[in-house]
Length: 311
Image 1 (cartoon, helix red, strand yellow):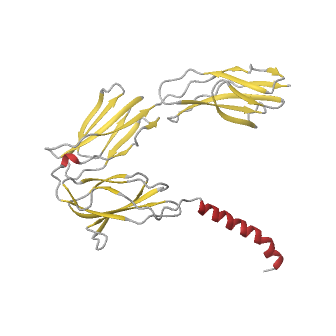
Image 2 (cartoon, rainbow, N blue to C red):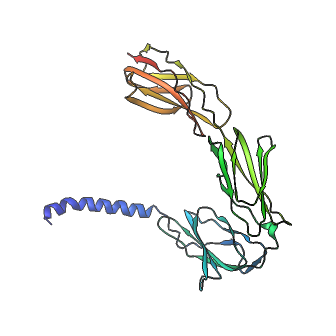
Image 3 (spheres, rainbow, N blue to C red):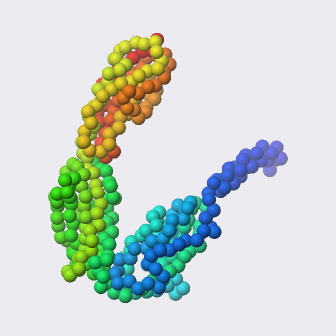
């Protein structure tokens, strides 16, 4: 390679190396930290096929690598589970038998050592101690989609599941027994909770519950008031004002759009806004409107377009 080219490239290489080193230094080293497992306790014997795994949080860890082997990691017949999770609690259904489980913490640059414990599921006599793990929709979902597939994990030994859906007044709007692990349901607008429990014919688990907010109504159209349409001013500090009647449901927000020409193709700025909203502008003619959105994903109609001139 030509020496002159090499000398020109050398600063760039050094700069890239510096950024790479800085990036590594920004990641906290967790490799010397030790995972503290909580449950199931080491060498414990369980009487339920539903196992809740838990461990203490490791500072600066992004995720946790959880593995479950049957009967152990030394001579595994099966790796039952191998997953990355962000929580420090994980529920899993397991057949009767002996197991080992282990967890390590990880981030983008480092990882801890695994901590391993063993346990045995002797039988499923304590069926009522199982936990129904709800899958979808996610907890506290806010959506404009009324049609939802409610689903949950199966419970070993369960003969039936009972689903209940309550409205915001705690009134049951749907109750159904099923051997399936999902049900299609069309919601009305409003806040709801849905819960599922399992039974084996003689014993029942507790209900597991999630909530959902369904909102299909778009926000009302804002009404502009200031600056008055086609008005002129010498002030460069503009006080935008508008009003809108809120609709019950998900949280609503407003966005202001300001353009430099009437065709509304040259956007000067856009911002989330609440009335009054102040912005410093330079001399010229401007065209503006406000549009509203809600957390469920509904979009309102844009307001009338107003113009004003700063002389």
